[in-house]
Image (tube, rainbow, N blue to C red):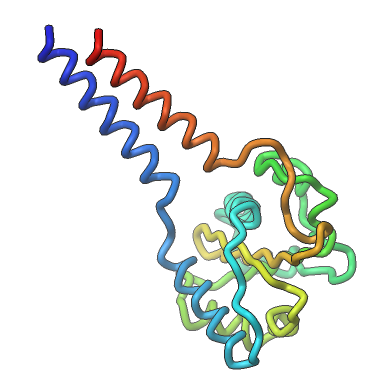
Length: 193
């Protein structure tokens, strides 16, 4: 009996570890772009962008929506400065990320489509095109990055309440921690029984 409890505890513990690992796992292409964007800002004597988890969530959701679309559709998702983020189904996507819509009006979404997400071409699309004007703007202090297929999405945020991409009661990390703690509690319960 003790051996089966120990096996069950080990199973639950491994499950909890895998769940926790999946929450903190990252995408190398996205991380490399984030570093490249900050290097670009450093050359302009601007402060580095800080990772914004909620902006990262919305960037992931948008890239998921664009998945499978050819790059010829990139013009359909042009940015519209001054109007806040404009994207089909944006309200649905921010709800999925638990973001208050009023905190997105000063943010901006920068979609890029590059075959096979060639890292040099992706970075050039952000730093040597019309997108550079936003990366060169000190009002943007945070960013989230998401990618899928040939699409890379950067969501720039501000420190202002209308551009912080905050809101909602529970973050994905908090939900993940609850799952982690429940799994750990169940494992300990089986050992102690």
